[in-house]
Length: 92
Length: 263
Image 1 (cartoon, rainbow over the protein chains, first blue to last red):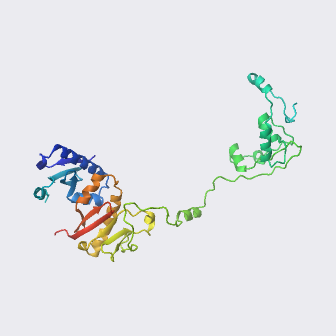
Image 2: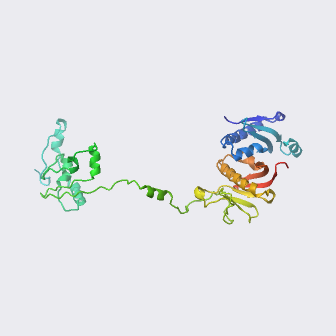
Image 3: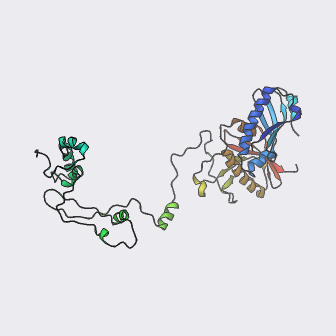
């Protein structure tokens, strides 16, 4: 079963174009993660780490990998040229 | 009979439909073809009946009937006739039209394949091959400028170089099946990632597994590679947590921080 992509509720007002681009990139990442060996070091490491993804236009997204639920969850985002928002959006 | 034709060419029956055609065509091979055949025979005979026989579809035998002895013997193993012929490996001699019977000299066929002995097979499988001269490292990989890797004693095929500014590990190229494997990812441990030896050895093991897994990800998956480049990935080793980054263009994994998980 492929990995699904989920967005946090705080990202409801994300521009549709950006959301589509993020979803496409994360789906590609999900396909690669799906091919990683279960119980391997890389999958374990990726699932423990807060991941970042830069999308064209300066957007930066933070997501986490949940192998048990087989999904990638976008937790927060930083719009371009918004350092203050970037700091607020960082996951803790 | 027309001059130049073989003396033993005898008119033969043809099927009714092709009778006219056969009567109009001589039952002999052309002069050019005959010359070539003579050359193939060493040029000692002008006309060899055996060579003409396939064209004439008629065998003229001038010697007593000779039968391969292997066909006369009883067959205890119920071996089929083609197999017996193959086993005997004897070919018939040739008879020429000059009236002389050439002795039949058995010629043993060279076998197509001889199964090797077990010890020969074992020696072949365990042979030492020289390094492949045409093997190239990836174009985006950094050239190997450091000293050869030393073993760390962990038995993992991965070793550490303590004399380098960044402690690097590399797959030991002199061991076992990894001897000719291309080195695709290197690891680097910075000073901030210092850890006790027992954690360090296991960390190197895990970095080796990470390197092999990362090497299996296709390079054209840009989205996949951009994410770990921007992220600080965590790696837990028995209560110690290390942070590392992946640098795909340099094919490098850098562990830049390490410490107990509680901090």
